[in-house]
Image (cartoon, rainbow, N blue to C red; front, side, top):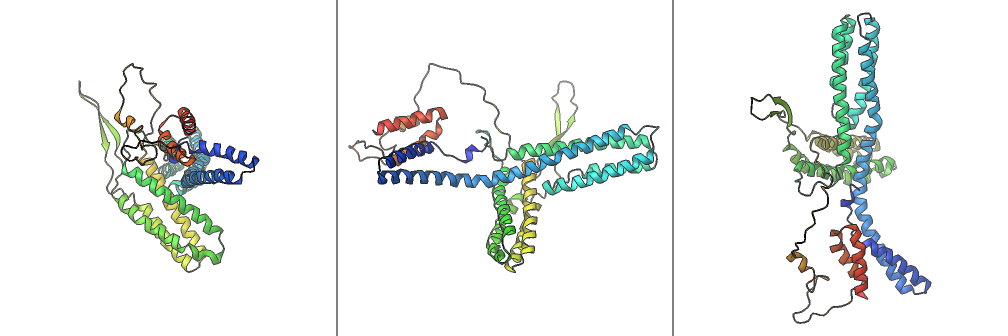
Amino acid sequence: DPISHLVESGTVMLFAKDDMAAAGTAMEAKDPVEALDAQTFIVETLADLRGKIDTVIPQYRYLLEITEALHETIPEGILIREAQRTLREKSTDKADAVVLAVEQAALRVRAQEYSKLINEITGFGIMVTSVTHMAEAGDLLKSGDLATAAEKMQQVERTLGEDLGTLLTLMQRLAAVLSAPAPAQPIPEQFVLLREVLAMAARQKDMYRESSAAKPDETAAFEAKLLAFGNACGPYIERAKLHKNPVIPDTVKKPKKGEPVVIEPVQPLPPANLHRNLVAAQERLALAAAGAKAKDRTKSVENQRKAAEGLRHFVAEYALKFYVNQPGPSSGDPVPTEDFSEQEDLLMLFMPGMVTGVRPPDGKLEWEVLGRRDRAALNENFARELPLEYRAILKDYYERLAK
């Protein structure tokens, strides 16, 4: 599960399962005290786990909505590219340039509509260049220059392919935003900011839905939350101002004999203006708060929608530009060896007092039976470091030791 690291449950659920059985046994024996005690611990365990899950679900759902929207719209881009290829193949010397110009114009309108939809989702300016080249190809067809028009159409196919490749890459990177990076890999500050803004954007999107479904006389109740979201954008904007577009290797310099290949990067054009979407969102949130204060539900909801759009564009842009590669498959089991050395940190786990966290007085090394909650806490602290197949063994060990 790519996001399991965000919901650290340890082995406490194993004890919850046992307590469910214990509660049932106590009920059969008509022991309400024991049944209530067992059920109380179950509720505490599930409430704690639910709190962790509730933090992750909005972010997961937020990214899922974007990726699903892209998945549904990408086929249209593929069909447009295929239609452009077919039109280019028809641009021969014997073709009717006027008829082809009409078809090219219709395809350009179709591409414009698709570009509008894609850019509403991402804010990237996808297909803008392709639409421009389509218009140029149409003008060439009107003038009767079929050969040059065919070359321009081929250029359209190439840029369309690049646009679709960008969308596919974005889908892959959005799906991995919540995944755990490689243990030894440093996480760039840009990616840290992305996750923080993602958490806020998910909450703002949920509130936008709530306010849309609320009654007009309930609009004023959202003012405080809208102001809080707007204030939260301030520090994010200042941090984003410090970020530049990543340097992308572009030009391969032909080396001399015996010299290595040198890739010359294309430097980003200053300034990068990566904070612009956050600024737009902050302005819309202020207008939404003003609308809520005036009990103008239409104004408040519309500005919340625009704010959600700005935050979505920020998340999409940062996910595409500052994606952190995830760990690859394991290289295999370690090579077995007969050498063994006990680590000092491991030995500390068996010192008196390490289990409960309270060292006994000097000279009094007495052990007491651990209660159910202490055993659960022990597993929560130590068993999470073990592989899953060993956690149940450790749980059984402490259960037996307690008896």
